[in-house]
Every structure is written in C-alpha cells, then in structure tokens.
Image (cartoon, one colour):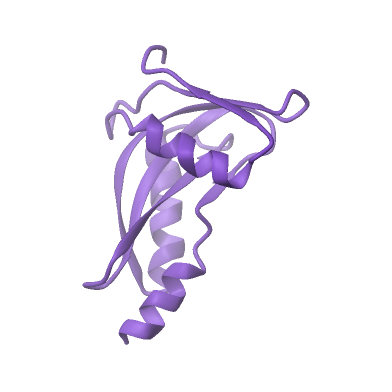
Length: 122
C-alpha cells in the first residue's frame, strides 16, 4: 500500500490556481496514510470561503486514498498578462498560510513570473 500511496501522492499537482484575478487560496499538507507528506497550493475564484476550497480539495484527495490538513490561507492576485502573482492576506478560519512556502511552490510552476508576497493585507 505504501508504494501505491506514494504514487497517488506524486500525482497530486503542487499548484492548482485560477488563471486570472484575485481569489482566496489555501496551503494544504497532503499525505498518504502514515506516509510522507507534501504541501500543495489551491486557489479558486468560485470559493466564497477558504473552507470551500479546502473541503473540495479534501474530497478529491480522499477519493485517491490521501488525507490532508489545512495549514492556512490567504489571497492570490494573479495577473497573467503581466506575469505577476502576489500572495498576501490570511484566512479567518484557518489562519495565515506560510506565504514563503506558497511563493516557492508558485515559482516552481511559473518560473517566468514575478512572484511576491506580503504578510499585510486581507
């Protein structure tokens, strides 16, 4: 089961965010039962609350036999025309995500972008 779980974990994209706009995001630690974990970023404009994104993510992962916990949230300002993403803010329910971790994940997915973050702002 360990190898299958590790494979399932490796198939989970590190970053899934909407293509344009300002929206909430959550930083989620995903792990196979009893196995190693990794952090992933999920950000979507359809979500009214950070919990909406987390619950959808948790459901998707559970179907793959993976568990997760929310490490915090914030907001993303994604400007693809300017190749810029700004990470800021916090989640009332989950607290502030570690934006530096989120920024590293985003840089790996968008290497040609300017990606910045700040702890202030909502």
